[in-house]
Image 1 (cartoon, one colour):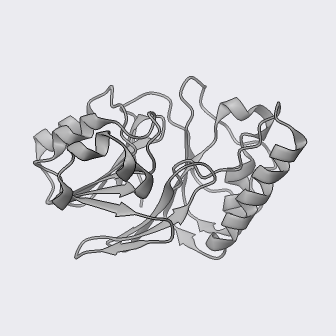
Image 2 (cartoon, one colour; image 1 turned 60 degrees about the vertical axis):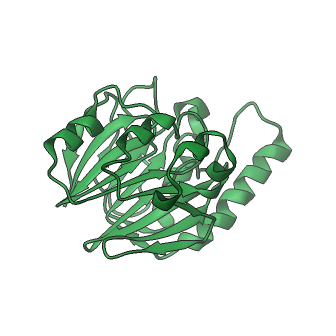
Image 3 (cartoon, rainbow, N blue to C red; image 1 turned 120 degrees about the horizontal axis):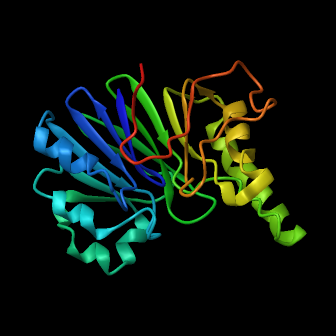
Length: 234
């Protein structure tokens, strides 16, 4: 499994002859274009977790001739940009929805912001892309709002208890300052995760987990900062 960082929450995942692209709003390195040009794939899925500008952009329509399916959260369906995409190639997923074909099995979960998160099973690999699902604990917010954010996060987190993942993409947003690790830390406590990839970190340096971050055994962590960075995962 080869993973390339695009930008923000955007990643290209290559598993044998399948390409998975998540939240490609911008790809300064041109990783997706290069992968298409190489042509070493039979299946190509593009995911967008919600309609926010830093997760969904119409340029992914340029790949339509190569795409097997666009997998979009249902909120995107109600945007003007969605109308340009070919209906026969778009699957809109509501929260706790499911889609399956001969290549992938996809389950959507709720978010603590807008849209959905995606659990993708393919060739024995289990991948979770959180979208904007996170514990959004803003230090300058009111105590009431911070409590609501906490309760909303833990309510959703119960849906993941006991699940196992080979790779998890999860926000570790520097804007949250001292709270930026909270969501990822609790997610790892609740799940069996082999590899964690930090995202939603544009403009922030490489993240190094704090000493008390791991409640269980430490696992590989990747915090990419430069578009085009690439790693392989088993």
